[in-house]
Every structure is written in C-alpha cells, then in structure tokens.
Length: 441
View 1 (cartoon, rainbow, N blue to C red):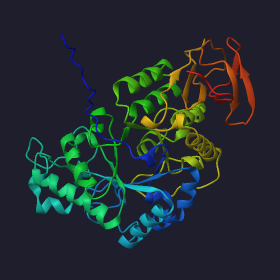
View 2 (cartoon, rainbow, N blue to C red; view 1 turned 90 degrees about the vertical axis):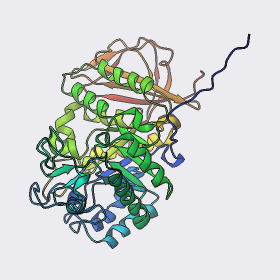
View 3 (spheres, one colour; view 1 turned 180 degrees about the horizontal axis):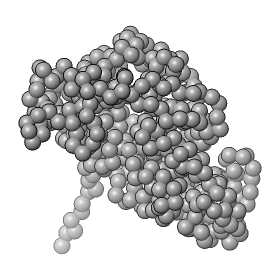
C-alpha cells in the first residue's frame, strides 16, 4: 500500500526583499518636522534620520487637503482632495522629487501614506464620480461609521471603476516620483482582494514595500510586507499602566509565533502620529517602563518604528490640524535608539521576520515581573531580561538557555551568569547580553 505524501503549501506567497532584513522604519510628519513644515526641511534632516539607523522613511500624506468640513486651520492630512496632487503647504512637485532623490542617494527607501478608504468632501471625485462613494441610510454621503471623522466621506469598493482609478493613481506616484511603496491607511476597511489587485499592478512597475495600518495575517498572503503590531503596543501600554499582567505579553508572542506566517513583518512601535496626538507622548504612555519598551520594540521580533520627535524626547503632543513644530534637541532616547539599532543590524539573530531568530522564553522565578528571552543564530545568542513591573526585583533563572559567559552590549562589561544566582533589577531596568563563547544546539 503506497503512502501519500503531501508537499507543504502556503497561501502566503509574498517574500521579503533582502534589503529589508534588518530594516528600521522612521515616520515623518512633514507639517511638524521643521519650523516651516516643508519637504526641503525634511530633506535637510535626512542625515539625522540616517544616523539613527533608519532604512525606510514613511511620509504622512503629501496630497492636498480638503477645505469643506475641514478640522482646525490646516485640516487632517488624511482628508485627501486630489490623489494626484502635491500639498502646496509642504512645497512643490519639484521639492518632493528632490526629497525622494535625496533619500535614495543616502541608500534609504521612501513610502508615502495612501488613503484609499475615504476622501475629503470636496475631493475632485465627488463631482466627477459621485457613484463611487458609500451612502448612509438617507442615501447621502457618509463618513466612516462610529468614528468622529466628519471631515471625510467613504468610498464604495463594489465599484470596479473606483478600483481601477485608485490603482492607476498609486502607479502614477511610482512612475512620476520613483517612490518605493505605500503605508496604507485603515487598510482593513478596504477589501483584501483590492490589495491583491493593487500589489500585482504596482510590482509590474517596480518592486514595492507595502505597510498596512491593520492587524490581520491574511493581508500578508499576497499584498503586504508588514502590518501593525497594534496588540503588542496595547499590551505594553497596559503593562506600563499596571492594568495588564506581564503574562499578557507572552500570550502576544505565542500568538505571533503560531498564528502568523513566518514571512510576515510586524511593526512594533512605542509611538506614532495617532498615539502622540490622541493618547499621549511616549513618556505619558509608558512612564518608567519607556526604555524597556523601546528595547523590546527593537530587539524583539518585529520591525521597529521611530516616530519623528521620539529621539528628541517627544516633549509634547503634536497638534494634528495646526502647525506645531517639533522641539529638536539631543536626548538619551535618541542615543538609546541608535545603540539598539546598531546592535540589531550587527547580529543576524535580531533581524526581521524570516531573516532573524524566533524568541525563546527563558523562565525565571519572578514571571509576574520579569520578561526574559533569547534569540540565537549562527553561534550568537542574545539574552534579554526586562523588569516590566513597578517594583524592583531579585530574579533568578534555571534554564539551559541561561548560564554562561556574556558581554553586556550596552555598557561593554563582561559577566558570568549562574543558575539560581539572583540578579537585581530596578523598576524598568533591562539587560541586553551576548554570549562570549558561542552555543551548541
């Protein structure tokens, strides 16, 4: 009797480009980046962004903003008036083209925010193609239901011509400005089959990098390189505020390992434009656990995001509908990011997605306070321990992954760790250690 053999098959066909294996993403809010909020000021700041170790620059929407039902003086960048246009607030098309060229010259990629789910009330499409828009129970244009997004109205993706228009507009930005991809706003509000159509059409022009503002593994099948790790952020915030147990973080990484495809990138972030504007600065959100959260966002599984101003201490919630320039200053948070990103790039075990190593839990005797793990690959083992509680702790370990001779990657000292020997960790304190002699699997 013959035995049937089954070849492994995966629906997740998208493969990550080699250049992205240790990439870090940096978000630019052009309106607030410089004193005048222009593309030219972003271009002048590129060497600073590069010095952090960033590889992908994500620019918030660059198109003109609607005036009808506008919020505040300048409006939300996510209320797009013309999908083919450049927002004169930021500069001219030539200014934008110069910025993209300068980013490429420094060896970085650039993706722009794309807003496919909705437009401004006075978008040029409202008059030319009103049937492309969704309607409410009264038959009128509608903002996204249940949100306070009164400055926008939703599209109807049951209209094939809308799909063709949106894909052609995205292709235009690739051909006209040579950008490298898109961060897609509320991507889950748009059908996944549209994204698969779009990805195929975009890749026919040049290979693109696609980031979805959503958390759904099916988006990784054929469309998106990376999705938001919203659950990671919410869990870390809950732990920092004392309303979630540390064990909730272990549940996140279990879910991430077993339920998501190996090829997927998850974007881990401490702050972004939404968090900063509506929830609070990184200091407000994480308090004494801020540095530990940053360490885990960079060294754990996932591609880390830096939101502009984090590295300068993120001293305020940036206004969303007005000019509110960042206060730039040297700050320890920036130095921490630089150091961590350099370490991430140095050791392949810490690389992104399929290029890096899976996190392996290292049990300890204070599991309700201390989160500890290793990532190991090619003879290098990185041991991480973080006190994620609001109390100091004396923690000890008993695991074959633990004992050994290590080098502290942050203070350049050596140590030998023994099973059952306590280590004192202050509130929010962390250790980032590399084995000295290699390991044997």
